[in-house]
Image (cartoon, rainbow, N blue to C red; front, side, top):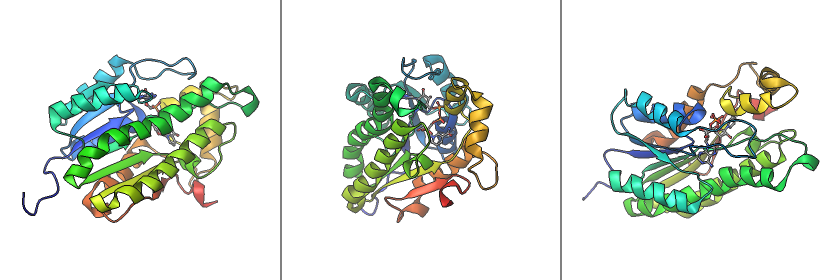
Length: 270
Ligand SMILES: NC(=O)c1ccc[n+]([C@@H]2O[C@H](COP(=O)([O-])OP(=O)(O)OC[C@H]3O[C@@H](n4cnc5c(N)ncnc54)[C@H](O)[C@@H]3O)[C@@H](O)[C@H]2O)c1
């Protein structure tokens, strides 16, 4: 179509969309009218010391968002698996034609001093956060390239730029995600595709609460400990994270590429 390189109705896919930051991002995108796919793992993982989202949680999230509009769909998908990502994207494409906005949000956290960290605990964090984003970007890009329009938004962390104590694997994984963001932005900018990261500070989600309750300090202790880094002393909310994502997904951010948008109440500033 002459003069139109941008699809009229956006289609978005949010990994880890069943709860927490991912659910708030999905809600914000649904409110823009985007057709939406929520991809989540659907089962627990042995190395992660708290529950992940089951299929019921994913379906409940979809049902809740269908109050916004009906074009919201669940995808059970473990982003660590290239094959699972292929199946999920193929299903999304069959229904919608292809993904315009990809939000790589799935993540897990295992806090442990390095000498106690097992190979499996290292791998699960690198595999969900960094390899999962790689799998989804690789599967999303052919459609974005063909359309000459796309937005990829990676939910990294302040840990993508700072060390988190007893979190070497999480910190390494988030630094890897920042590296992916910068290098991929260079590859795709000429196709009118942007790749950016949002770097939240402390958000009181199941990830932090679950990890905290597995530690001696408890969930309130971990939240309080991490929130002391915030300049105002208040935690970040999932809606704060979602607002940053929505802006990066919008036309207003067309010339923002390869960057990190901190939503950390100033943690990275000191
Ligand atoms: N909570 C925080 O303080 C904080 C701070 C900075 C960044 N983040 C990041 O925000 C993102 C969302 O985390 P959250 O805090 O909302 O936690 P959460 O545990 O509530 O949500 C994470 C979601 O990812 C899903 N998931 C985990 N492994 C998956 C896999 N292999 N495939 C597909 N889905 C998978 C989980 O089931 C869950 O629904 C993560 O990337 C996290 O690292 C969180």
